[in-house]
Image 1 (tube, protein in one colour):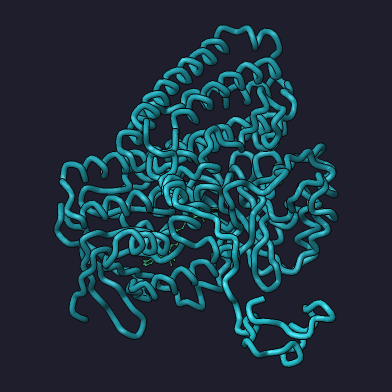
Image 2 (cartoon, protein in one colour):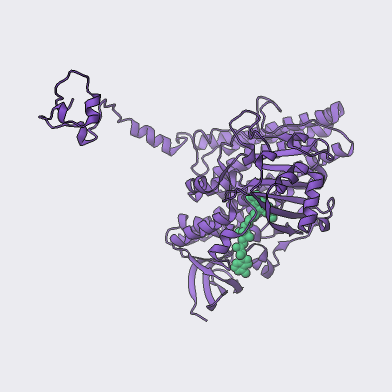
Length: 614
Ligand SMILES: Cc1cc2nc3c(=O)[nH]c(=O)nc-3n(C[C@H](O)[C@H](O)[C@H](O)COP(=O)(O)OP(=O)(O)OC[C@H]3O[C@@H](n4cnc5c(N)ncnc54)[C@H](O)[C@@H]3O)c2cc1C
């Protein structure tokens, strides 16, 4: 065995989470020594079909801004046009997309999002990390010892052709996904659906190349707005399941098509082979089947039970679990890269503070707050799928559910992430204190009751501004953070966003009760209790907003803009051009006859000579 090598950070697993963590660490902590261990070769990484192609706002802005990859993403992957949702008007007739009730995004989102080719992205991230000095070991973690307090951890790797190598590290990150390396050693993982808010799903998918995209839509943008629905993540719903359809940027413009299904409603044993899966698609979504059938299927994957949750993510003993090593719920809303963004930024900040020798008490304060926040976010993501098995196929219930969940995504989570509020320990703890799972459960119960009673609350479109009140649209932000680029940490007024989200949610409750249950629903004391509680919380958040404004009085809304304003004070307009080529400055004795043809043509006729500097 080779002599032991020491690193500041060893990352076990170099998939998406491991690679983005390594890049984030090297960008934020100059000189940090990082090692990544993964058994797959570069060629293997690029060629595998990995799911997780669809990014949403938080995952995408993390890649674009925090990792500095925006140009790379534009040039190597695909733009994404939000999420589109389709429910069959009649499950027995699904021949074309016109047989579905649809919610279409009318424009590309303000925060640019992407459909990424996961293999390509991971291969390229790996190359960027190597170029930035990250040590890469192509091998499998054979064993490791997690030490207590600040004692170095030890990792043993088996590298093909080289035998065993031993590494030691101040910080050990488990990004090895479902190998559950730290999870097994610490009994950290929860698999039982009872502890996952009843979530008991399976996943099955294929990648298809060379499809006839006109089978989806002849006109990619029938709403006549500037977008292409082919580039959305298209969700096709049915009873107890939903399918995704995502375009992928490769030589044959493949698409990724797959389903998440609930074992209580769909018998997984009837989906676990390609032929059975195709039969299911053909019977339940003929239009989608025709798209698959027009191309060539490249692979087939079936996972019986992908969901799990962990109890701890960031230990005081300097080990961390991120990505699927920590938790995964369901692919709905494409949240994988988002959950990783929250975790990676938290881990980097803990390690940065330790590396910088900051006060141990303040580091421990951050570590415990970040751990609790990230575990809480994992539970929140899991809760987001509660009772999906009852709701997915019902267009009315799901359209209301998506509308509500979008209100909170764009009103709470996206601005919190952009404003870096999750890195403020006080805010992270307050988020947990103000947990709204109880409220969401009451809404999910009401969606179930509506379905059980055979009622219909109509169809609500989360992209329209005429569905709730005051021209509100859930995908619009509540403050000007995009326009004014208030990106400095904790500068963005998250409290205004929270106050408006609570206020509008209280209206949502009233409107839903009225639409679903009529006057008895609207007048029920339960409805008013809920609505008034949300209003009270809105008022409370408004006070937070006033405090935030007071604390930030006199501070510019954006330091960059303030600097530009300052620089502009000395600006004086000088109405002249600088000489730009020698051709434009002919010698004093040069006549027009000796000038090149281009200059002669520009001269008015009848002028015999052209003095220099004319
Ligand atoms: C069906 C489905 C659809 C999804 N769709 C989306 C989506 O559209 N958008 C989205 O954002 N997320 C999506 N996700 C989630 C997303 O795929 C994951 O969050 C993400 O891939 C997790 O990345 P990771 O790095 O943790 O795991 P991986 O990418 O799986 O990487 C783990 C790495 O660990 C390595 N490894 C394993 N064992 C060892 C060992 N012993 N030693 C060293 N290395 C090891 C592996 O080789 C691998 O490279 C989806 C998930 C599923 C199940």
